[in-house]
Image (cartoon, rainbow, N blue to C red; front, top):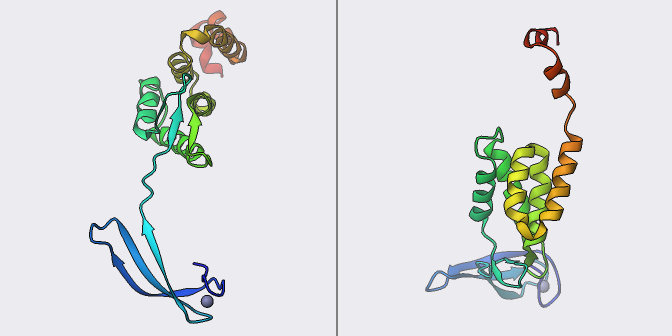
Length: 169
Ligand SMILES: [Zn+2]
């Protein structure tokens, strides 16, 4: 903590106590350079981080809500929960890093979609269909077309050849 008298950056805490309601901690500090004492208060950051919906409504960013959406999209899909947690963490960091303490839901959704797409295309499509809703059906259709185009050609020979020939791979 920068000394308010001389600007020195190192100090020692000489006294530390909680407020009556335990909402803050008051610390008495002594500058290691000039020896003067000053006080700091430590409080829990209680201002929420918000997401802004299309219509301008704001709501608190909710990790659990994001995770629930991902779990729904990944139902019966081979995506480990650790990957989903990682996506939630990334989404949360993205919101917290905002200097305005808020992000558009569209930006958060796009970030989540781009991550999910890497892990599982079916889960990605499920998430996108919920997230993009029917107003963006055109966009959704073009997304689907892209997915079909990028689909690996591995299914083609399997259809033409009988099952036994799989062992030759
Ligand atoms: Zn000082």
